Image (cartoon, rainbow, N blue to C red; front, side, top):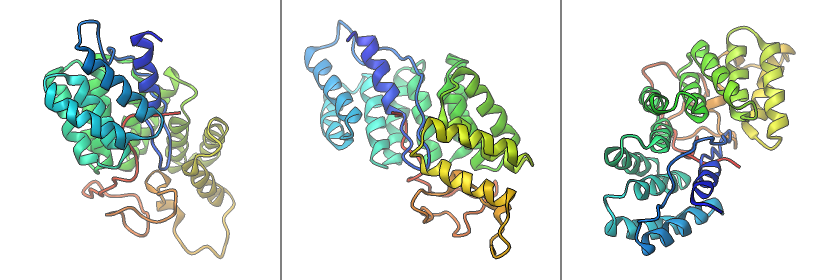
Length: 277
């Protein structure tokens, strides 16, 4: 496998959202390593990337922390370490590592994307939007950045903006189940539950095991076919912020209502920066 294809494979597997949705990255970044890099650096980077791909980010963190001491000026070390931290729900550390990567290389597109997702995971949705727009300034067709912006807008309850962002993401990649899921929720909040349910069904077709999609389908179905004994106000329910196990993450109201613009929930368990399936 060429270095470029290896990096593309890493990014395709590295933008993973365990709860409630998964996103598939279409980022085509510079290779993790290049021909002039020290052999020791290249070996550890490839090993760490494969550890993350295989679901062992803690192993990658051990190796990358050591590598970071030896090569602190290599932006891709910080980038990959940020991904690994995100996969272990250490999103504050992920933010810091991606910041370092961007400082070293402002044109590191995947670092901007991962930085934005990590910011969203810590509840800083407006900052997430800003970070993803930086990625789009480098590549206007970055589907993951568009999907992430839509997620952030939906988390803020800005449904029309979320809809527009996800429709753009889907134009670039129709198979993004997460984009369809957020689009469906947004359309439902805008008063189009039938169309919203159609989007959720497409998301379910693309990812039958996604618990977030299942929750969204149940929510929209309840709107279309209300049960009289149901006491909660489903109009305020936001499946995007609902954890797959049904319990609210730290900082999220027990009602699972859409947060106001002043709220900043500590949603570290909602997403893990950068990886898909």
